[in-house]
Amino acid sequence: MSAISVLKVNNLKKYFYTQQGIVKAIDGINFSLDAGETLGLVGESGSGKSTVAYTLVGMYRPTEGECLYKNQDIGIESRHRSKKIKQDIQIVFQDPGTSLNPRRTIRQALELPIRIHGTEKNGKERLERVKKLLKLVHLPADYVNKYPKMIGGGEKQMISIARALATNPSLILLDEPTSALDVSTQAKIIKMLREFQRDLKLTYLFITHDLSLMSYVATKVAIMYLGKICEIAPKDNFFRDQLHPYTKMLLSAIPVISEEEEQMKPKKVRSKGEIPSAINIPKGCSFYSRCAKRMDVCSHQDPEMIEVRQGHSVRCHLYN
Image 1 (cartoon, rainbow, N blue to C red):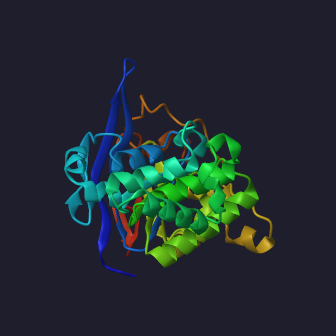
Image 2 (cartoon, rainbow, N blue to C red; image 1 turned 45 degrees about the vertical axis):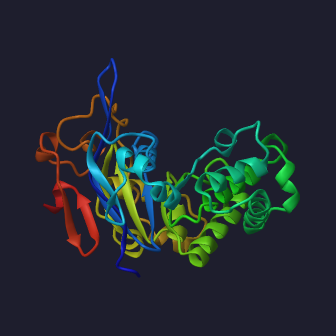
């Protein structure tokens, strides 16, 4: 594994100020991503995982903290100055139906980033590049004249992936790229993404709520809960020895189809209560109200992230 740090996130915060109060969508997270790695960022709806991607790609301005791409700041101001950053970091959204302009043909959708970044010099070269991108995602060349409404959801997502690849990026943010697709199409796209990573030397931040998917995709896994990372570890360590009670709860709920898979799961952990409001997060540990292992200290003191073993860190008073 390369030692080059492609992405480094330091104390990243993103708050939204509403009439009801402050929504701490991201509340001081830290992680790094080396070349060729896939970090699986997993969490329930409302955990803040998609906000991480939108902040990294420049759709949101961080409230605090820094995001570094190859040691270069990728805040909004830096992104405006650097065309190279925009070219190197691409995103694939969850719903391809809303991320593709219905008034543009597939050719126009794929040509736009090529034209903006000037990777091909003229119309003929751009068209050839578009056809190569279609071939790369296993779609026929005659799709260049189709509109998004003329193709299925899986094909739309393949077009979205092709568009992300159009600028020859090195880092792709995948925001639940398979959640809206049927199982067979999911498998096809996952296989394709793994091939692209190997052949094109790509690094992925893979955002999902499907923890079982990470055993096939990720090199390391991070679990988010109410804007904070509660555990992060290399994939093998993560699935062999989970530490945080919330992580154990998520893993114990994964459906399995064999006795061997059942034995790998932690003992069944029942969820208590409801997820607190992101506007009114409890004092102390945010998982306190749902945790079966809670202690008195958890009710008033927010635990810090500590490294229990190399590369495996957890934010829980049980390990302090």
